[in-house]
Each structure stands twice: as structure tokens, then as C-alpha cells.
Image 1 (tube, rainbow, N blue to C red):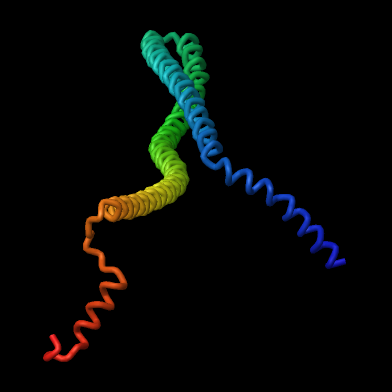
Image 2: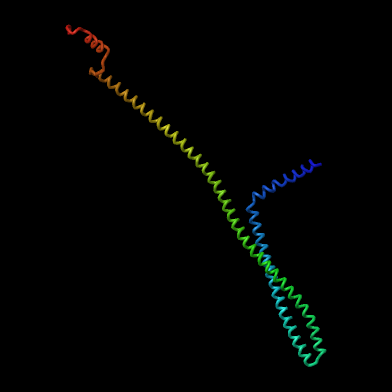
Length: 234
């Protein structure tokens, strides 16, 4: 039974992995929506605070009117007692006895509203400061994401540029090789042309009976015989 529980736990954990990857991949979008939700919550809280303050103001105004009414009836009851109008004084005293507990309850409610206002004001101030901080974090996150995108693009451009440079180097090498080959062929052609010109010139000189300075085999043998004879025979 323990193995089946472990398998069930594994299946549930595996089901959460795609969700976690989806959340991580859209972290900034989720953060932006959470900020919007927080801003809306703050706006609602401000509205509630405004309603609370309005209710506190209305209650304070009612309390002032009630205090003034009680004070007026106290003066009237005092005057009635001075004029020995016991029944009238008693009637006024009953009204005062009814209003005083109401004034006390309303004053207590006013104090509660004041406490709630103070607490809600503090929460709004803290939330406002936190919201500014989170907006700063969002700007940083966006900047980092943009930097990552630019870095990836530059890395891709660098690879593309390196490939272009390699292609250019290969093309230059091929061009230089072809040019060198063409120069070698041209030099060889010039050598051949020069040899052909010399052959033609020798033929023309020979035909004209002009010695071109090139020794023949007979001339070489005659020179050798002449060098080999004794000095007295010369």
C-alpha cells in the first residue's frame, strides 16, 4: 500500500512539472498581472477608507447635534426645576436619559471607526511603498529580459559574422590562388615566347652566314687539339 501511495505522489508531482515550467516561462507576465491586481485592491481599499471616513464624519456630526440637544434639555430641565415644574423637568430628564446611552454608543462607534481608519491608512501607506518597490523590480526584470534577448541576438550575429568572415577569407584565398596561377602561366608563356624569339634569331643569323657566337662541336675539337700540342710545335 505504501508503494501505491508513493506512485500516486509521483504522478501528482509529475503533473505539476509542466505547470511549474509554464509559470517560470511567463514569470514577468504573471508579475505584471499581480501588480495590476494589487493596484486594483489598493484602489478598492482607498474607496472603502473614503466611505469609512465619510461615515465617521457623519457620526461625529450626529454626536455633536446630540450633545447640543442633551445640553439644551439639561438647561430646560434646570429651568423647569427652578420654576417648580416637576412634571416637565421629569419629561425632559427622560429624554436626556434616552439620548445619553445613544450618544455613548455612537461615540464608541466613532472611536472604532477612527481606529479602523488609522489601521487602514497605515496599510495603504505600506502597500503603496511596497507597490513602488515591486514596480522597480518589474522594470529591472524587463531590463534584464531585454538584455538577455539582445545578448542572444548578438551571439547569433557574432556567429553569423564569423561565418561571413570565414567565407570571405576562403573567397580571397581562392582569388589569390587563381591570380598566382594566372601569373605563373603568364611568366611561362613569356619564357616560351623569349625562347622562340631566340631560336628565330639564330636561324636568321645562320642563314645569313653570320656567326652568332655559339660554338659548334668542330670548333670545340679544334680548340682542344690546339691546346694539346707542345709549345715548340706552335
